[in-house]
Length: 96
Image 1 (spheres, rainbow, N blue to C red):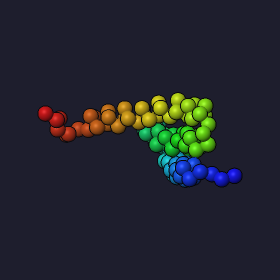
Image 2 (cartoon, rainbow, N blue to C red):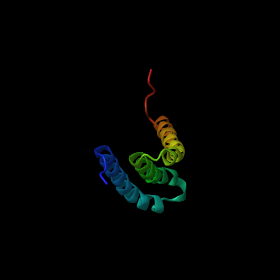
Image 3 (cartoon, rainbow, N blue to C red):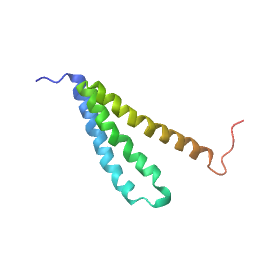
C-alpha cells in the first residue's frame, strides 16, 4: 500500500503533536489546585489534535468531525483565557 505524500506529512504532524502532548502531561499532573486549567489545556490541545490529524490523514470524515467537536471548545477556552489574562495584567496601559 502506498501512502500519498500529503498523508505522510499529516502523520509526521500527528507524531509531533503526540510528543508535545507527552511533554505537557507532566506539568499538568503536577499543577496545584488553583492553577489547574492552563496546564491541562496545554495538554488537551495536542492530545486531541493527534486523533484529528490522523482522521484527516486517513480520510475518516466522521472521526474528523467528532474530534473537531471536542477540539473546538478546548481551543475556544484557551483563547478566552489568554484574552482575559492580557486584560487582567496590572500596570498595563490601556490603548487609546
